[in-house]
Length: 616
Image 1: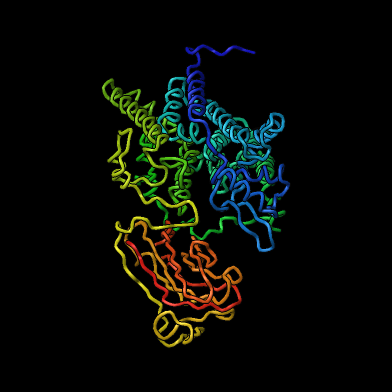
Image 2: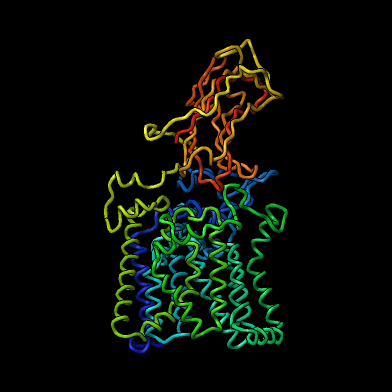
């Protein structure tokens, strides 16, 4: 085996190895803690379901609930959808499961041999996923170096590697959260770009096959990554002459297009087979939560770029240099300009069109843009090249600024790791109040967005911080509306109460759009109702329900059952039910809250004085 070249001959290689060593070091300084949880639990569930529990359709959901309770991996099973005919289907595609399958197999063998629980979630499985992430990060950095050396010399390639790894959220997403999909996608994109370059240099079947498989794998990890097809499609085209030559190249090598398409299909075939097996359909849309989705008509571009919550250029300002690099790219290498620029703009538009534009926890800055860094490294290199050509004072000033941005990013990564930068609740006021700080006071934490409960029970504890407004009282003293039966015999207050039975299972509903409820980012809703069951509540289910609706589709559904022990509901007497509800991160200001009582059993129930308060 050949020895590594000296630092003088290949500084970019040594810098790549040092960057990788730093990521590995911090991965073990901050070891993984229950990483197979929340979204990662959804990515991963394919593996234990198939190879340990032999229940890919999740027909026996009891083992999943047992794992949830034992390891606290998630509070609700939002990672899968219940099917009408029984069983569940995974919400997330299986790309991450396939990429981590070798690590899972090794962890399973080790668990059986070493006496750990071979249940898919004990310590060996946790560490296997984390170590697997380090392997993919290593491959990504080394491949990025190879790409950069196509365009630049050793010095500029080294500088760009340092900036991408240490001056952006790449460091945080590999050293601390390398088990998320973005680290893997970054590496996959390095292969997409590398095979694109190689095929255009020397069209060969192996490059077409590699490119197709890499693109199919990217889409298998996250279907929206289909935008990656723009990279090879537009590569090398800067004018009509280039377009004509590209078409001739494709015509001459038309069999390569077939090879590319087939390898892309092969990469995605496991998902199609799974959907067919689990749902009976070759294609299945698993994101059936009406509270999230793509709203292409109103992308959140401003928020994605400049919000203090997760704004890309707020938390990763060094990428301004990459954007400025498009000017240098136009001047020096127009052949790749449009491929990179159009891909970046389309991907930014897609990322910004997702209604949960802050992409929940897992990162500060915009984690969904991480794969774009592979392409943005090229204009970044050209702008560095331009800066080096400037006079000494301007050059020194720019490199001092770059150094300060690197230091800021590393410090903010430390702040994030120690909870100073919050994962999801950042605000402008809080950011400014804690800028440069290593500790946070209780008063400063009050500047964060509201902390949202992760379980199904929500209780308003600090009522004095809100103004209270009663917005509706259903006392049933007015003449009965269609579908209502009023009772004189069983009444809590006044002359009438509402009698609900099998033919009339729903009470009148209170509805109000979020825009009329509050001008803030949230409000609390409290619903209270008097209930008179005529038999034991365990034999006759009924619930107080609060939910939101987007274009008629329900999300953030909450229901409190009369059988809940917290109410101590007794038959043949009036009981009080009270339910607090925190409004969700609404998809649209026009989304409406709906509050009602629902009789699910067959024995009649009486209700009275359904009251709704809003705390602003």
